[in-house]
Image (cartoon, rainbow over all chains, first blue to last red; front, side):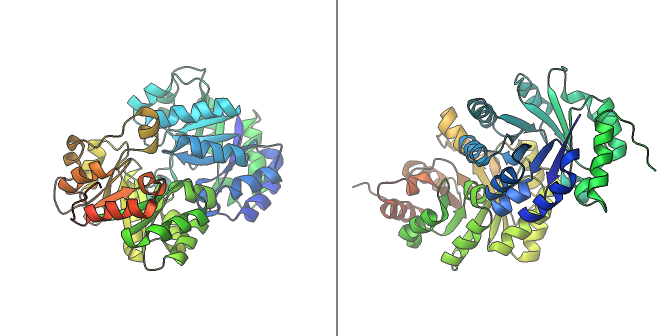
Length: 215
Length: 215
């Protein structure tokens, strides 16, 4: 299982500083939507420049204007962009086409995506599907538990690559691992930890098949 | 009827230059999603600085992290932000609360919003509801006609403020005007016109109740 570090509500220099602390224990770096909306593509460019050997995901949450958003993101250094699963189908398909052209990838964010919409997307074999409990659902609606029942509906075949995001802790990581999730997206459990590098080490140890013992 | 000028796929200085040409014939200025994702909140700040007396809409298309996105946008000078109608309900409600706190407004973008989702939103009397044919639907799926049948479903009571966006022309403006649309969002029909100020003048003349005669 890969660890994707989600960077949100930070300045670009804070994001770089934090990532340096945990670099060896994370696989992918997510330039969060908040960084993109606050600082634009400069945030993607700076993160790619600081971490050229890491996979950079730009959490664009594209809803429209897919060609343009894909172009500015891939050109800025993104290896993966995100598109909303509840965007018009043509927008999702265009992101996929653009990614194929640039030899990059797309993560489809399934936040508030109906099972009907999801069903029509599962033919896209090279996308990454992201199960997502949003920040607002966690922080404002109190939804923060990953239940086993939330996992299976999203991946009818093992050929899909599945990510999960939203309030993931060491405890829920074990469940997600058992559920076959390929990528765990971790934000504040690392970035707001008292000791981010130790937190990242614990997540990564568990993700890579080790057993984490809380000392 | 108000005219909202949508600025997309431009640099900030191009956006300022274009807006100066048409300033007297438009009511609201939309800092498009593409400007926000490319240049961040700098785009909102610069547009507000250049046009302090105009209403500035930041097309944030918020899907999550409502408090933060509202805060950075209103602080940068936005008078209105947008939230997706198909975002989690708590995200939409938080945008509305934030707007009330800042004495600003929210436009709910109804792109790919189900009638069930819309129904649950119509109790929010102070939001602006935006009927939206997306760029991708227009440019890639060939959907570009405003049909009368698309209008009524969205506003069961005349108390709601309704906007419409997506490929609006002088011809479709007449229909939208007859349908009771309060705000027409015009992008490329002005920004890509051979003569943007003349195009804006024509839209505005019709929007303000005059009759446009194509000479």
